[in-house]
Image (cartoon, rainbow, N blue to C red; front, top):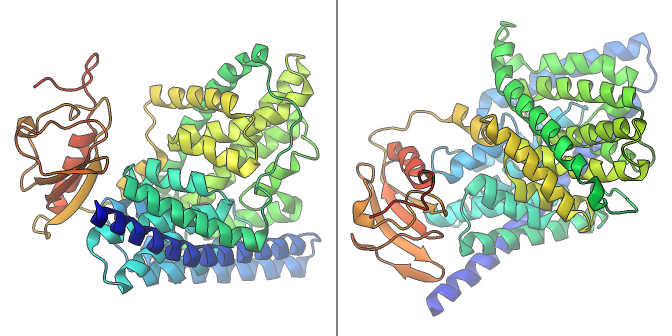
Length: 509
């Protein structure tokens, strides 16, 4: 027991160090993007032909620089969350220093000019690279290295949004898929210390501070059912279009490293027309405090932001979809609310409520991470009063996407990155959690057909460590540690996550 407590203390201290470093890196990243975007918006304020020529030349140079970065390190493409998830699953690996500095520079070059990309995905990858570098410099073993990567990822999201609890839960629910106490301790410590650093620099005001006067009455909860269906359908559409974008870009017959020229050129007329629309979308969300636009304006904003978000992310430039998803959710909620007000089915005062709820629900539908979505928006908005209606709306939207067979978007993006695992790769350790409702729960170890060259070497049940044998019963909540070949990891993960048949809690043995 003393050894276990000592190990936990070491992990807490290491997590704190990773959080401080990642918080500093991500805060610098966040500041550079905000400063650059302010400069870019000012540059678009007044049109002139010389200014247009200058913007075109700067955009072309930026795309060229990004193409160089992507050619040297393809792992910085996109949000970075699928790459981190692949690392934690043991199926992908990157050079931490190459990713760290190229993602930092590439993310600023892609997001600061005003493309509809978010800073949160790159922030998660930057934090994960910090954690990986800390582990490798300290010559940590493979499992400790994964813990530090997960902790750095939690710190990255925490520093990006000032949301330490959501940052921790996102890594556990969506990225690491593991709720072990060790990951909780390290991830939460890193997230809290990173949040302290970012709050010291940017202040403690919530990132998306929206003000509303009244809680949604129970007699208006029927709106949550209708809006939830709409958000679910729109979420499934978002998934389908986003995953189809690479095929659309291939029709252009451009080298992939130059796909970024498309969103940059499309952004130029939009910038001169409405510079306030540029960026990931947080400014638009906060602007709803002052005034909620008309139905026609909101409909136009929805179409523009949806299309430009698809084009920007589909190009493969370094940037995330987290914040664009939240902004789209807010616009959908505002549009639905304004329509209901026009039809006299909803008082105007509750439109801001629907905006807040819809941000969480839209992300819950697309990312299929409802707990993270609810906590993230709660921390970003800075209020606990909306948990009940937000949870209802998120559950409905999530259920609609599930019925339509939508998979978590980051998991779908990860599948595209995974290469064929080598058959002769070295043995590696893999930790997987058994969840309630899976076939493995309540099974005897000896009754399970494990993949070839796979050995279950340990079961962690709470703080109890078990050495399994054929008669050991696996329980929901157990953390299983395997030793296996790289080409068996995917099959092993599918086996552990396979659901029980309908009407059963698990297999009968």
